[in-house]
Structure formats: structure tokens, C-alpha cells
Image 1: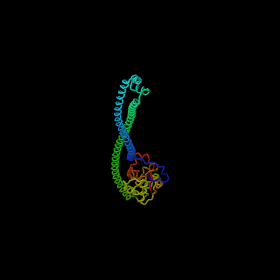
Image 2 (image 1 turned 90 degrees about the vertical axis):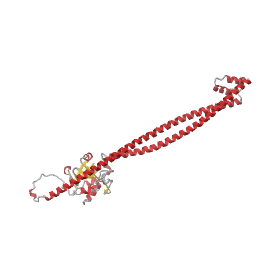
Image 3 (image 1 turned 30 degrees about the vertical axis):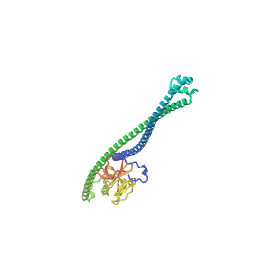
Image 4 (image 1 turned 180 degrees about the horizontal axis):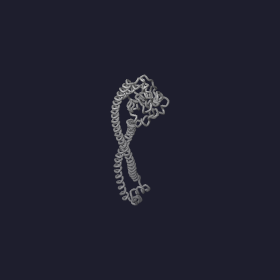
Length: 356
């Protein structure tokens, strides 16, 4: 696009219907890939942390199983002491304590009864306390660790699923990006081949037109009185800068550079300004400003060297004949030949000017 001095903010973006849209799509996919990569890194860290936590829980469970084994062993010892104590109670005929023991319906009931019995000795109380402690600790620890382990396993599974999902999305995005890059490469190659064909055709046409112009010049009739009168029409003066076409076409393939106006890179009005400067004509670096130069020319009277304008004067090129023009389209593209009959150019065509 050319630089618009007063209306730059209002210039609509140039929209190429093919390669540029694919490049924009590829750029979007690459942006999504960067986001997914960041998400994957976080998911991996969370997954690693959760598996480390699970490993700790598993170590705790192993320690608890060992403690449980010891507690069960101690419980058996305590139960053996209780059995021995029962024998002693029976032998010593301590009726009150024996009544407490024999009246119990279960071990828990017996522990409860002996806790409240005044006749229970210090030894009995200590043994029963140990039994309750071992059993209670084992039950609490086992329940707590089992709960934590189940919760931690859920976290690990969820984070593993999240990581796998992101990895799948990255794989799909990489596949799409590879497909887009391949498609873009094919489109660029096809466009380059088409540009070569257009260049050859344009050069051949210009040579023919040059020979015809020379022939017409040599056949000019001096006696103007013999020319039949013509109906009065408003037409543009004949072109005087057809040579600018060859100058502009010498830059085919030069990269588009916003605000560029030299062979190092051009925007649309920069290419026009530079090309006309090479034939001694000074034009502003603005497609809007360039539209104010020369005279208007209708589309059916276009001649090589005429300026053609599009997109509300937001874009300009140089007509080369045969319904084609040379221009610097937009970022990501190069100076190239396009046809006025192409959809976007036809739909946004504004008009043409002939520089005198």
C-alpha cells in the first residue's frame, strides 16, 4: 500500500485472497502452538509434581504397613497378656473383675467395661490402653493415607489426561502447520511460474506495441486537411511515459516494504514514485496524492504507463497493457504483475490517471 499522508488511519488493509490468507492462517497456528507449548510445560510440571507427591504417599503407606505389622504383633502380645490375666483372675477368684470380663459381649465391650470398673489393676489398665492405642492409630492412619492416596491418584490421572490432551493438540497443530506451509510453498511456486509467463507475454506485447508506434509515426500524413472530421469526444491525451513500464518491471520480485521507495523494498505508491522519477517525473509518495496528478482516463482507453487505483485510493499500480498492471501488493509479497480482471481488483477498482 502507498503511504497516505492525511488518511493513513482510514486506509483499509489490502486483502490478498490466496497466499496472504494462508500465511495469516499459518501465523495463527504458530501462535496457537506457542500457547500450547507453554500449557504443556505447565502440565508437565504439574504432572511431575503430582507423581512425586504420590511417590511420597506410597512411601508413607509402606511405612504404615510396617507399623501396622508391628502394631498387630503388639496387639497379639497384649491379647496374650489379657488371656493370661483372665486365667489369673479366675484362679485368684477376683469375682468383680471376672464378672466384668465374662459379661462382655466383645473385645470393645470388655475394654469399655474394664475402663469403668474400679477393680481393674494398673497392669490391666496399661495393657488395655496399649491395645486401644495400637488399634486406633492403625485405623486412623490407614484411613487417612488411603484417602490421600485415592485423591492423589485422581490428581495424577487428571493431570496425565491434561498433558496427553495438550500433546494431541500440539500434534494436530503441527500437522496443520506442515500442511499450510506445503500449500503456501506450492502456491508461491505456482505464482512465480505465472509471473514468469506474464512477464514474457508483457515483454512481447511491449515490443509489438513499440514497433507499431514506430510504423504509425513514419506513416503520419502531413496534410491534416485531408483528415475526416471526427465527432467531438473527451479523451485523454496520448501517453508520453510508456517507458516507465519497463522501469517498474525491472523491480519484479522486489520485496514489499511499508513506506519503501527504493530497490531495497517498495510499497505501492513508493514503486510508482520511484519508477516515474527514473523518467524525470516527480510524484508524491502517496496513492491519494498521485491521484491528483495527470488527467483521468477511462478503463477502455488505458495505455501502458497509466496509473490504476483501487480500494478507495488505498492502492495504486502502473498499467502495462493487456489488462495487466505492475504493483507492490502488500506485506509478505513482492513487486508483481496482476490482472485487472481478478476479483479483488475488479471489485475495488476506482479509476485511472495518465501522467503528462
